[in-house]
Image 1 (cartoon, rainbow, N blue to C red):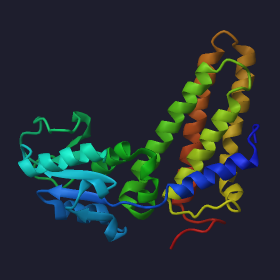
Image 2: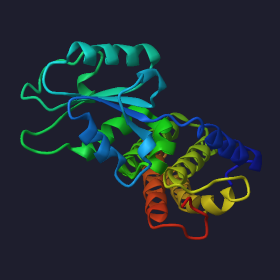
Image 3: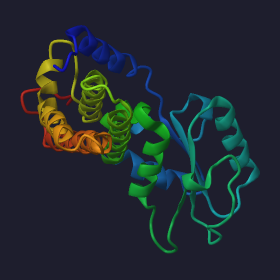
Image 4: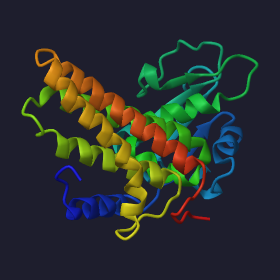
Length: 263
């Protein structure tokens, strides 16, 4: 597999297993916290979305504001910053352009007046802040699954696009591209609750096969356009990883095939 030894695949599986524990919950605080917590728990494990608590023991903090941040809101956000806990704010007040202490403007989700919580946008903001650490939460909180998988696909595609662009030695980029694609597929599988171990990994990684078609195409293209080949190679690495991730997401979202899934 493009120069990747079996021990590397075992290492990826163990890396994923190590990230599964301990699993911290999301913490929701502020006005209407109970309502948003119910929305985020929908169809998932109730214990993984709590109302109130210490941000240091949470996977991420969501503070619901009714306008300007209160002293309690600021205390929680400050505590999250100190504990390096990702935090986002959900603004339900009319003054949507108010600055929120300790939260970047890009991490503030504004609720349209008279409408419910924009749960999908909140989940997307959480996915962006959680990064790969959101994989195991996505397996147990369906609200996060799509946003986390889309973030993973976008992130790994950018990485591979960059690798394909900056590595000029023919074939030298293949191991790195392949490892990233394997990691992406395993993360998407885990986000759908698929149990992964060393025996089952090859079966799961059958979904990675399509990616090699793109790498073969990239090598053919380089033979025809050697001058701009570096740019095309990067674009193909990006597009190939995107296609691979989307295919894996559709496969695992359709339910277990020959792999076991958590009940």
